[in-house]
Length: 210
Image 1 (tube, rainbow, N blue to C red):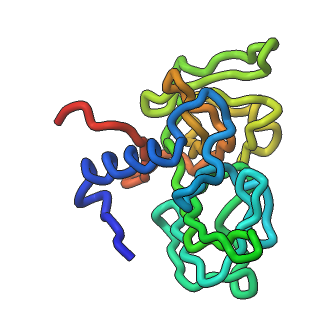
Image 2 (cartoon, helix red, strand yellow; image 1 turned 180 degrees about the vertical axis):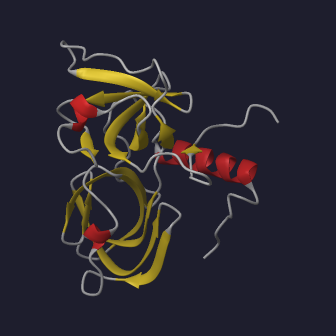
């Protein structure tokens, strides 16, 4: 299985990721309901359940499946019997599933991959108060505007309601979909450790110049 080392080839990696996002439908539409089943055998969407794995409400069985999680964890030959997927994934994470349709009309995942859209600190001065009409608020991470929703975004890592407690300077990992205006609408936000020497930060996008 071909893997690209981002430290060695950052520009190539960003271009490749951008091409995949466009191909999977994750870059537009203006809604959180990205992806869906198509003829290509690739689905990009949110994790909605476990047992096998459910993405956008559709079940994908795991049999000899390859996992590639956040560039930190990779494992081949995964099935429901030998691995607990909840150890590395969570509800509302956006994943890409390569699948095959079975003769009985069900689906088996040949690979499941997850990588956050942006990871870094919430920028100073960027955190807004709640919009009471839409029940959303926004902040900026590494130049990316992120919108979180009280009722549909999952928050992990705060001692209470993350929607209320997320603060400027918090290091967060954001999973979600970009709308037509290039705003990242978060399905899941996880609080990470504070920034430290050699800490990883990450943002995806198109290279405009170098």
